[in-house]
Length: 175
Image (cartoon, rainbow, N blue to C red; front, side):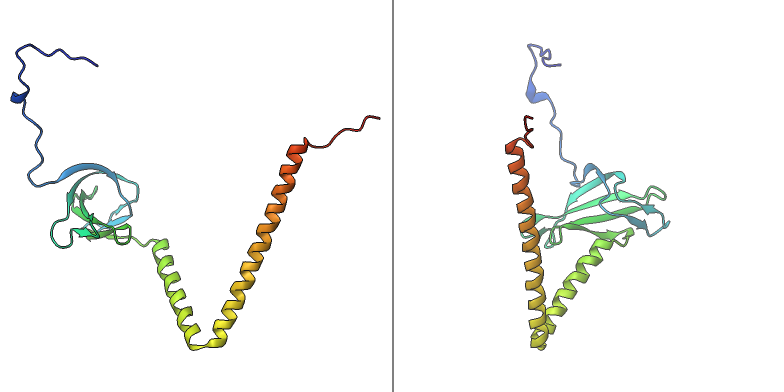
């Protein structure tokens, strides 16, 4: 409906405005960003499951990270109705579990940590062993040269493709 009837004696100041909740908990319909195992009944709440949650801004000294507000979410376990809380982690662009359950293992978290540890270890090895540093530089330059050769080959194929498209393909000879 685009137009609504407004009576002549209507006073908009008499209409009560919607008020913010007292405890600043805002209801939010959200999907779980990670899998959780409830600490009470050991049931699993899987990533992507929709929940009616309550959201609140974290207050105090831990409420902001570099000016970005942190939020806390409250959900209930679907099996035992135990409250489960987690909050945003802007430092790592992720979420952190607070209470009520444990976060399940995720491969990509471990992979990132392993890669960082491996890079740190190679840097330390290079500092201690100059021959190892030289070998790593040679391997890196060989890998870059191979990538450049492959890129040049792709460019040449694309250039041939463009020239064929402009030429209109093969021409038929009149016999």
